[in-house]
Amino acid sequence: MSQSAEVIPNLNPREGEKLSPNFHVAHHFRDANTQFDSGRMGVWLFLVTEILFFGGLFCAFAVFRSWYFDDFVEAHHYLNKVLGGINTVVLICSSLTMALGVRSAQTNNKKQTVLMLAITLVCAATFLCIKYVEYAHKFHEGLLPGKYFTAEGFVHENARIFFAVYFMMTGIHGLHVLIGMGLIIWIMIRAARGEFSSRYYAPVEGVGLYWHLVDLVWIYLFPLLYLIG
Amino acid sequence: MSENSQESVHHDAHGGHGHDPHGGHGGDHVPHVLPLKVYIGTWITLVVLTGITVAVSYVDFGTGNIVIALLIATMKAATVAALFMHLLFDRKFHAVILTSSLVFLGIFISFTMFDTDTRGRATAIEGDKPELVAQPFKESRSDEAIKAAVRSQYGVEPAGGGESKPAGEAARPGAHPAGSGEHH
Image (cartoon, rainbow over all chains, first blue to last red; front, side, top):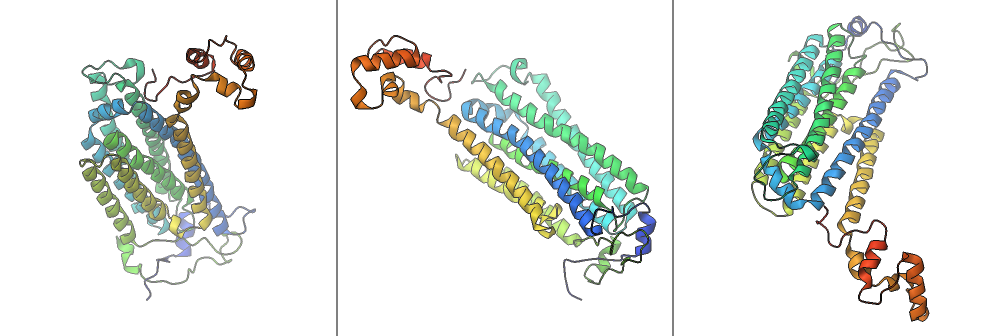
């Protein structure tokens, strides 16, 4: 028994048939592997567009930070590191449960797939709740973007620029989390209906890839906004 | 989780090699399943690295702070991409796709920063000498030639050496105020 990464436990083809009754290989694909691989590659291409999308925002952050360095350093202290750190761990956990959800679909474990996706959803909701708490506090203090900035007590006068960048980046990221939640609910419903199996789990994998990207963006957002400023 | 017991067994997939009425051409897709401990290990790595990032942020390394933060973030990102997103076990081209986007992003951000961080440096050198820009070659730099060149290029009357700085700066389109960090 070799300890190999190629693990294919318990693949009963009849179980696969039961679980994915409508699965078939489209005629223009050579075989099921090609079909699956093409789908996954397509999702990666989409992720590239997402990376470039957020990349533009990161570039704006870099430019404004260079122009208004002192303002950024001062303003970033008004972000709650603890809440941000908790959010980071929450998203990492959601990434784990999402990956385990994909794994459960791969191993024909329908109940576990639904469970893992549900936990991912809960983590995502937690992330958004914590974000809401942070935003509420900022609104209360007048720490708002651009022309809506009304807070007092700043040494440097351009903290509004930092908060413009902060709200833009975390806001769009939060929107992606929300969209991700919608996708996860969709996949969860399909999984509960028994549509996924070792033969067909591509949608779970695709949503998983999207979700990991959302996590990746936060992995960069958190240190840059909260810790470095 | 019950499937742990069969994790280390490697056996060929029995699934529908061409006999499966629902399968297309040839056999079914065989999923590449990673052992559970790989996922847990990745998760632990990520949480530990997060802790390190936060801890390091409390120490002042100057510019080192941002370098370290980005370095650790990249390690976390690489871990997620390679393991959770399966890139390590995928077709290599998928990793090429990801890497190429990061390369483009790198070019995008670094060149933008090259530009914005060095603005105004030329103005300090050339700003008060429009005649140098108008007529860079000494031979053609007679007084009349210079005055005519400044007039035609900048559309202002050359006021003589020391006073031509405002004319040169105002006339150049999109002129940046000298010195960075003073953008209002």
